[in-house]
Image (cartoon, rainbow, N blue to C red; front, side, top):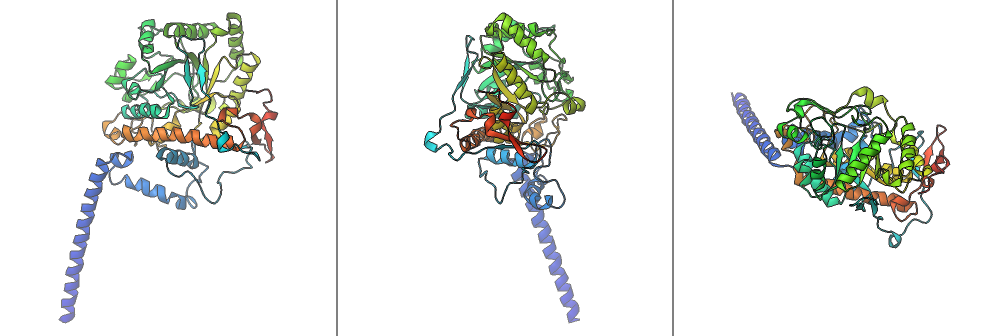
Length: 496
């Protein structure tokens, strides 16, 4: 009888403790739910309270699990974990050092390495980045000291809070923000940063009813002091030969109004400017935009066939140097976008490693290198890639996806579905709530500041006083044999 009493007492105690544990668990879940919905630093937790915490748990434990089950740090595409991790740490302004050794293989063909000198640049010899002026022939030329800038991202492809955060972040970092082809939105203007207005093939924001340029609308855009330059987009890396694609689910009433298109319908731009039949037409539009706005005007393209570049230079020589575009934004075939046909994204166009030297070489040979500034774009999200682009002749770089990572992008690859879990590329109000523009703008600014800082580390280790002094001789590339060769053996003509 006594043993039975002890058993019943123990059973009651166990039942009571079990109920207490269940009650505490429920209270903990309620607390975490409220805490997650109230905070705005982590969009995934805000949009997916409680269960979103598992993402951060798995992320922290990932380095242990990857060794046995998942991809290694350098294997993922389009951006591997090592690259994303650097951007995240730079955006959060936390320690960017690593331990024990690099996970980057140094004997794989195509690997680039920078050549340090026995006499690195001392702190007292470091010079500030030299400001560059674009459009010296314009009524309102544009001068900037920054090397790294924010590439084209439209309001529509990106959400209201994302564009707002980028605008404020660009202002804090002292770099420009490209509006993308979706027109000038109030959110681009909110932060007061320098803006590059992009004129896409559909000419959203500056088009008439027939789809041609409207001079009055151009003037209205140019009146904004924040708008410093105009970029005529001919093509972009992720979809060369195809215009912009914004799925109808993302075409809200506000976006439809800004673009001048029907709400809820797919926004598909023409695959080229209807005015362009020859290089003469390109220069005519450049001159027209520059004359109407008074501001530097350039073109953006991904290279495939390069014969048209020679024809363009011939026509510039015939008309005179003043007729040239003020800058050329060169996109890489592995550039990104919110939506593009896979065959174009995978198989069409030249990557930057091949097209950048081609463009710079042609400009040097035709005596236009100083006249036309070169802006390189396409997967340039870490300092090493930017240093490489500068060594091969770029004047500036522009990154879109790097700044998306700074906003909190987790490479979910849902940009075209309006289901972005971090609120960056969705117009779902619930998902946008987790993206706090004030917090994320600080991260964008920190990312760009640290990008310039670590870019300087590479330059100074090579013995130059500022990054634009890097040349092909400072870089070696690994061949199929596993041995490396200096890039100046390939690009001896490049003397910036």
